Image (cartoon, rainbow, N blue to C red):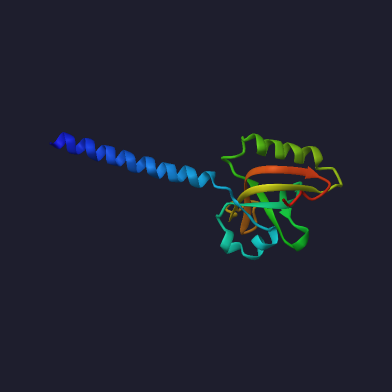
Length: 149
């Protein structure tokens, strides 16, 4: 009797874990909400920690990379790569593209996905309270804004 109880309990626990894993995987597969950069900047608390997709202008400087939008040109965010995503092809292609075009006078535009997070490092680069942690890049181009479709 005890053996049956242990087996049934184990199977129930396995079913519960499988269901939880299924929900977690589904949540990861959901498409990030596309948000206007200026909307995100004006409502930092609403979007903090939430995965979103942005269409932005990318500026490369000696000590870091920032993202911005012409519609609210006085605001920008420091762009930092998510350590878990650094080795992906999309991110390595993005940073290679930036390196190859950093001396160009033409603007760089990208469609990126990530999260607003607290700038935790007290070093020179992360002096701001909030940074954009880059998780993936779907488009990058030089010269003109990306198509908003």
